[in-house]
Length: 159
Image (cartoon, rainbow, N blue to C red; front, side, top):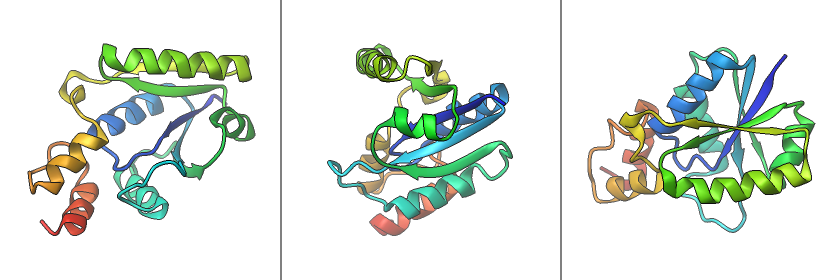
């Protein structure tokens, strides 16, 4: 069974994330969406809220599991029996950071591959930061995020 980990903070989940996860689920036997707890960041949503939104948004993808982790991604991926890490690329600006991350991961866990998927053109401009900024200024994010996320953003910002 080919298991892959799709890591991220997902604060919040965007349609770009959904695009990558959906496409990965069509290629691999199991996709674990791994929500990272990063103590250096102050997220808008709690870990539990992020996990719930992802589960609801991806409920129709039967080979997708949602989990949370902290620590090194390669340790988590090994623990879950993954053969690869799946990451999305939006633009050239993502590449430099992703190359560095993949190189470090390769050094720490040479048996793990990193697989990059280009985000669909419809979502190449999206980031969680952009979504939060638009929502904070009471903009319509319904075309940027799953319905559950739009509702939760509305609650957070009282739109």
